[in-house]
Length: 157
Image 1 (tube, rainbow, N blue to C red):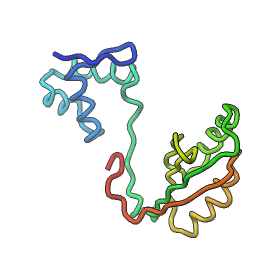
Image 2 (cartoon, helix red, strand yellow):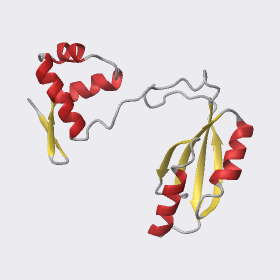
Image 3 (tube, rainbow, N blue to C red):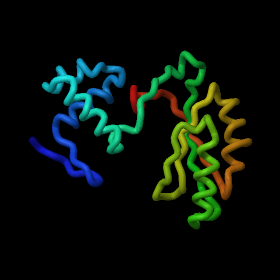
Image 4 (cartoon, one colour):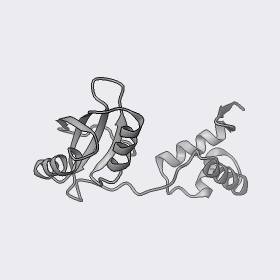
């Protein structure tokens, strides 16, 4: 059985299969998992608990339908900071986490410093979020926006 060494713990092919099953359907029962991986329920449940305690699984959540909720406008904002010293980065990181419309924030190595994925109801609301919240974040020098015309593949969908 092949094992993968990752951050002071090991996962094998059965662990990997458990993870793959959970990614596909986080509501899958332990009975279904154990059948799929060829273990009885107790050892399978113990493996699942280990995967959680070792940090391979951060949590479980519902994936909501943004269109049904009227939140299907997606924009990506490139953010350039005026200062990129550690203190400035920390201040930006802390503040951006508080903006509920920002679904993702990634520090980028390139012509800008951060890429933000922002979900709102429409372009008017996006403009408000950009002007009132994002542009007011610590050390923001400039932003540039690209609007998604269609989401072809999103994480968890």
